[in-house]
View (cartoon, rainbow, N blue to C red):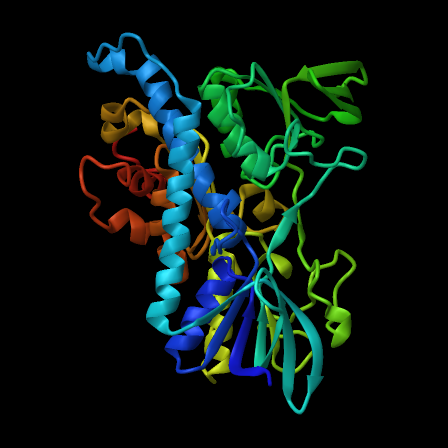
Length: 476
């Protein structure tokens, strides 16, 4: 006899576990299936984000920043450091502890909200009598669950280069990049994807010689190009070697490392020999083992699950959220879709505004943005005004000793409504939240300009950028 639930969630990453919790809060009997395992074979809830993505990368970024500050910046503050050492194993162990704390936190949240958890891989078996049978195959005995509603939140996998599969020893995805046991002398990156840039930053700070090979002729093509140029300048100054417009050829992996044949933008043949190679060229929707064909669940040509604007699939009462569907592959986008779907199942009107989803790259300097870029506005023929303010003119940034970057605000030329905000600089990931709120309420640049911001604070740069839209900055 199968166990019956109102809602079955397949996947315990940000989209899945949040959907499960919200559905349980709304009074449904909820099950969540997830197959991630920790080193001991136990459950490791949180998906890619918690286990090999957002959380562990930020832990390593923080550790590497501390080391970089101690090695290069403490002296500016009158702090002398002698005999500075580096214990990579301990650094990685701390990262693992942070991951486990997050894993355990989700287990606690499931217990608190009465979500029934099943450790294993969930797959469709059949649809009958208004219910869906879902098989759970894992360490324990195989069992079948039945549910009226199914939410698929199976996430994504790193995309490998043709002919160069990940071995997680020499050719690394985000997973292997987070488990490097010693600082490589030479590190290569193919693609300037978010995880790749972040991991490149980590190992560069710790002493690696880092080279990035990017196929596109522009750096960070999705980013407002004024901001991207500022970031590029900062990264080059830090020692990252960035090659744009390249064509990658044969990749050979051996005991001594990895050799990459490539052609530069001028068409000249080159070779890059490195100890480790991180491939960061995007991600693909994960439907491995889901058995969508068993119930006729429709996938698109890229292998993603086809959904409408409300995350409904072609099947009644089957939903999908996060990386496995269209839209940006961001943990917080998945969370918002998970909440919205749970509320729609309950007859409420869950909503996700794709125009106000913030993006963040946690390099140093951080890069964050929301809304449209200047290039997008020009392409759309939208009349706009732009205002920028550099952190070098911000008192708090000077006190921090980190004045790289700027805040850029774009507003409608007629109505002054904020259309996009782009930040490169210290704590951009935190500063962007004010701009998201402002855009959700369709605020004008003048609204931000008229709001009192604490002094001294980095947020004053946002206010000054808003003032700059009307060409009346006060501190620059």
